Length: 132
Image 1 (tube, helix red, strand yellow):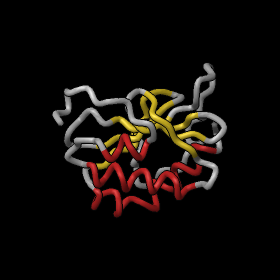
Image 2: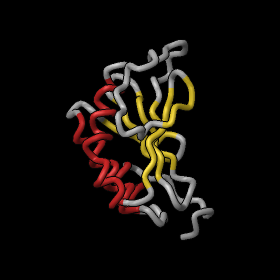
Image 3: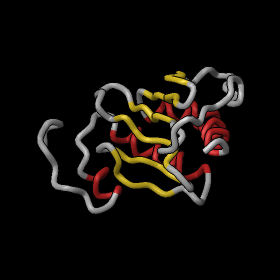
Image 4: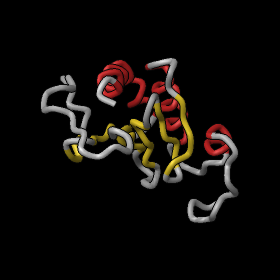
């Protein structure tokens, strides 16, 4: 199936990922696993045509449009006006790209890169969830 061909609606995120035609599908699967390993309270659903993760509110959504990178967009849910204070997220490896005071992204270019960054990314996610 072409990336531009509309897919039938997936009934679960597992179905969505199974039907996904993306060159970095292995990294997408590994990233989902990493996110779920951060906290047993994390759930997911499809939002904006990609896996989106939540605890009490949504806090991260995958960005899957680029063929050469998988991004995890971190955000603070639907409530407006919340921000993360500067320096509140420790990021000694400089993995976060801040997109605003209430959102940032983590990017990987494959499963091997994700494996190398796994612990640092999990630490960032735990800190982020504390602000949601």
